[in-house]
Structures are given as structure tokens and as C-alpha cells.
Image (cartoon, rainbow, N blue to C red; front, side, top):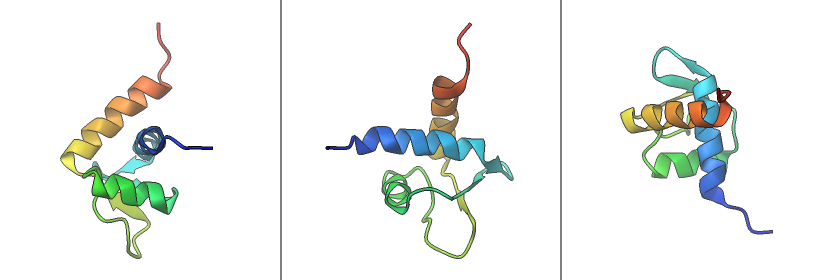
Length: 76
């Protein structure tokens, strides 16, 4: 089965927004391959390290919020 990694990355990025804290950090308990792809796409800082959270880039935070609202808010 071929996976659409771009869609997976969008879902992970949206869910990272759910764990947003300190205005620009998110808990990083997601698949390492997806986190690495998000880093290469410029959405988050390098996720490798001892910290339990990752830092969004400006573009990553904006995109994360957009995806979160699109995927997880009820439509009226």
C-alpha cells in the first residue's frame, strides 16, 4: 500500500497545534519520519534532541492552525 506522506504530514502538523504551548512550541510525540519531513519542509525546527517539544517556524505555526481549523472544527 502506497502512503500519501503529504497528507500524513498535514495531519501531524494539525495535531501538533492541539499540543501548542508557550505560543510556538508543541509536544513532539509523533512519528519520527513525519517530524523529519516537517522539518525539511520548514514547518518546525529540528526535532532531534532531548526536549519533549518542538518549535514551530512562523510558516509552520500559521499552516498548523489553518489545518487544525480545517480538519477539526465543526462546520455550521
